[in-house]
Amino acid sequence: MSDMIDVTTLRDDAHGQVLLPGDDGFDAARGGFQLLDPHRPDAVLAAADDHDVHVAVAFAADRGVPLAVQATGHGRNAGLDGGLLLSTAALTGVRVDPDARTAWVSAGATWRQVIDATAPYGLAPVSGSFPALGAVSYTLGGGIGLLSRRYGFAADHVQQLDVVTADGQLRHATADTEPDLYWGLRGGGGNLGVVTGMRIGLLPVARVYGGSLAFDLDKDPGVPAGWWSWTRNLPDEMTSAVSMLRYPDLPMVPAGLRGRNIGKLQLCWCGPADEGERLIAPLRELGECVQDSVGELPYTESGAIFAEPERPHQYRSNPVLLPALDADRLDTLRAETAAEPVMCIVGIRHLGGAMARPPQVPNAVGHRDAEYLVSVLSPVDSDPAAVTAVHRRLIAPWQPDAVGRPLNFSFGPLAPDQVRAGFGDADGRRLAELRARFDPQHVLRPNHPVSAA
Image (cartoon, rainbow, N blue to C red):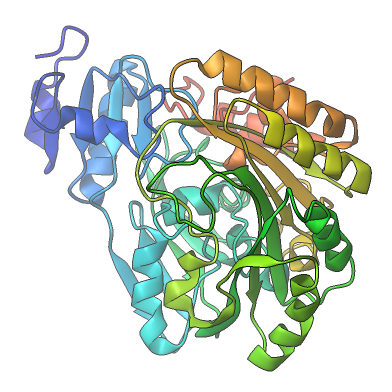
């Protein structure tokens, strides 16, 4: 039994396993996808159903024990030190209503599970570029997805959230019931309660036209700037990004990329395929493609567009939201990243379109005026501080123009002012007031805790 927590009543009340340090499954339950700075709880409740969410919140609130929640653990920034970790990884149910074009998504479901459940009806969610992400946690943070320039943020399509607040109440948050919670949960992260499930609107998307174009940036250094110029007059149906990475010269890297400084253009068009090909064609003229995977594909294969690594690992990042890009600074970033001894993956996403327009019912998503998201991400082998310093130096030239910080892309501990930078000033104050109202004792330890300035 834990020295910090007497889990006797927790085991009596919960349907799922209660795990303590040294128990089989404890390390796996607390680990998640992000392996750097894992949670170090006194106990883990591996929830078997929604009932266990109530049990965990009530247990933590009654005893003044800090409570953190983890589904897939992709975006964890700082691990819980002591207290209770609630794992929702087993709560993966998805129920589709094809007539209403909605899906009910349980707390631990991934976008892969949602996509697979909705695809037979020719429907799709505003899912992320990586299907293994937890759908609920992604959406609570706003959710910039493959269809977002056409349809907006994932949070814009949430119709209802069931949430257990720190007082132990289950609340059904909609535009008409619990409007403050409904506003704050959609884009405000996990500050206000523990979500057991959400109902989301689905889109009539069965196929997209997309993939990636890869170029050797040592031979064709103008590719990133050429992509940026191309993005300036695009229809909303086109969502795109560019990534820059010098691949290691290792056997597990594809031969065409091994040891090369690669720029990849990631493209997703949700209109007629022939129109998508016409729009994408000028990008192939930016240089000599060393890899071309662009074509029509079912939405179930949309994860192939970014083809992000699926193996859990350690990483840090530093992102900013920008109103515009600058060709000279973009080229400098390309050159400096390639020269860094630390492996750095620069990702730049084109925003705007429907993301710039307010949703039918306002929510807490911040900085809709941003046109681009610039992020530097690195795997971490030994020294997180050294990686953080490199990221800070690479992002510094863009910082004066930044309109804010995208919290869903921020991987690493954040100071209170950095969390506040995820929201507009008024929205940040409102979120802090709601947190004080719904969790005055700060029992919940959200990934990005909002606070008053």
